[in-house]
Image 1: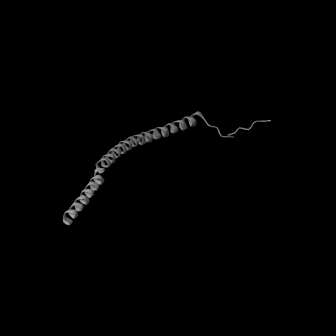
Image 2 (image 1 turned 90 degrees about the vertical axis):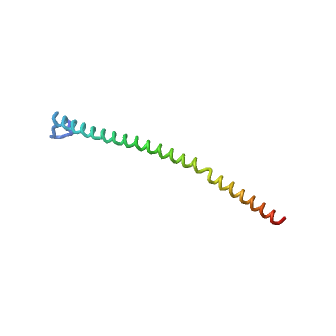
Image 3 (image 1 turned 135 degrees about the vertical axis):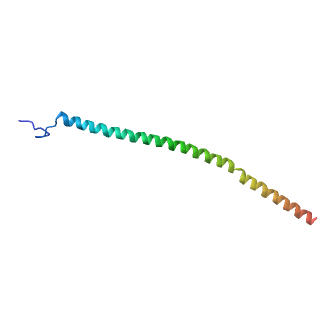
Length: 90
């Protein structure tokens, strides 16, 4: 029984293998450059995210006195209105 050659009459030489290896190497170098660009963009996005987070925190810290101040002013105005009503009635 004879064993069949899986490639049939096709022969691949060392030159073809070497050419394909070089082509693959060029593709890998291209991908490496793209990965470096993505890594740089990720670093910039991380910095932007940290900056936005800090700015949002600052806005939140500066915003809390407004409702408290509004509540105090409304309580004072109610007290003054009651006092004015009591003074008019007396």
